[in-house]
Amino acid sequence: MGILTLDRRVGPTLVAGVISCILFCSSLVCARVHVMLIAGVSGDEDQAGIYSKEVQGWQKLLAAAEIPEKQVEVIQQPTQRPVEGPSVRDQIRARFAALNQSLTADDDLIVVLIGYGTTRNREYQFQIRGPRLTDRDLAEGLSGNANSYFLIATGPGGGPLTRSLAGDRRVIFSATAEETEINQTQFGRYWLEAALAHPGAPLTEILIAAEEKVADYYKSKSLARTEHATLSIGGDKPVEAPFETNLPADRAKAWTLSSPGAWQKNSGTKPATAPSNVER
Image 1 (cartoon, rainbow, N blue to C red):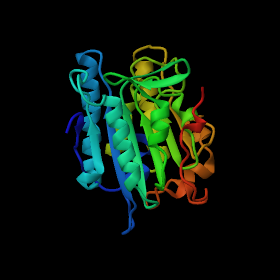
Image 2 (spheres, rainbow, N blue to C red):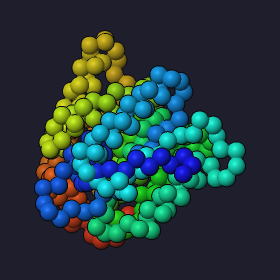
Image 3 (cartoon, one colour):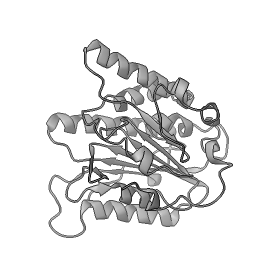
């Protein structure tokens, strides 16, 4: 099974902040939701613990949503770089390619990046063992015939993805707004707390609740805030928190529990685009 640790579970779901939109479907007919959790390489034991907790939180959340186990994958990093065979990056790209061959217009693909991202020479790089996973790799992975593609970057450095990966059938969320926001983030755990406490709440309410907890965290510790959550829906210009005032009303209203993909129903039928929109 290589680096792919398959931990499959659950039904309609959307990742983290966007999660409440897909997590619980009140209608009898729901689109198939496929979830890929990618945990990055950690720099020390403390960071490894943070990643592990977040993965476990996602597993708990997905278990509550009853997505069939064959539709969820957890990709963990090996303890050492593969000496022979494909790299971790190539294995992830192969999984994307296989998924996109099977996804149909009735499916949604959710990708969660749990870990550290950086930007070098205007290229986003997600930290995995060996060659890094780039924004071009992700753009290819989020392209195909699925109903919608969701990407959630809960760690630092993911802000550029809300611009480079924005597209008609994509929702891109990052815990940070800029490539310079590279300190450990708090949003991922607060987002999960809010979603687990009120899984049926509207998307905006979960985002707002998590944002309030992030703000309280920095205030209570007298720290300068180093993360600003950002969201791009359907190719729109990225919107930073506070979402209750900055998210366009039509986008906020489109997110319903019974119709998680309602935001793009009128956007046409063409597939999500490949990496042509990746900024360089």
